[in-house]
Image (cartoon, rainbow, N blue to C red; front, top):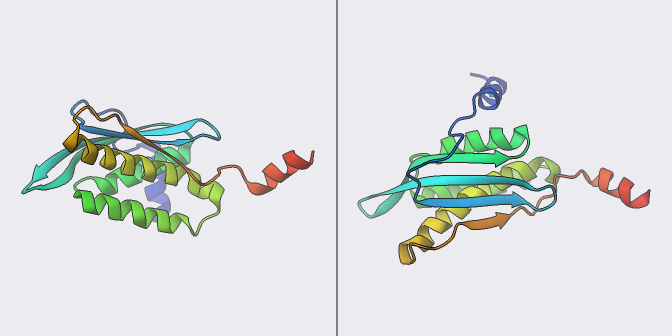
Amino acid sequence: MTMDAQLIEHMMNPKNYGTLAASNAEGIGKNPENGEKVAIYLRVLDDEDQPYIDDIAFQAIGCTTTVVAGSMLTEEAKGLNLNGVYNLVDATMKLLDKLPPEDAACSEMVALAIKAAADTYVKRQEDPEYPAITYQVENSCVVKEETEKKENA
């Protein structure tokens, strides 16, 4: 399958979209600029003291790019142990550094939501009532030129 075909498949049939009744950790990524949000639901199981993602789901209030990124990143995260999840988030953030901020914001929001869910899981090992963690994006999804035009108008 070509890269374009993969993107279209994730767009038309997003993987892991919805909620997860049996989740034991949740995390939220949000963009305060436009109100977009991504919620990640994890079911983390222990395998020889190494927690891993048994199942994952996401919901998004956002654009198509956010849904595609959610579908792709949740597919990558499924089955990973927590170290693998953090490595996936770090690798994603490094890739996003090479993109214009307006192109990076949606994927950053998904990666941060996955990190927030993993961090929530870790916190809940000490305090089962720990609330879901929320992280905000640093990238802006508004193109700089558009912002400058508005300011100069």
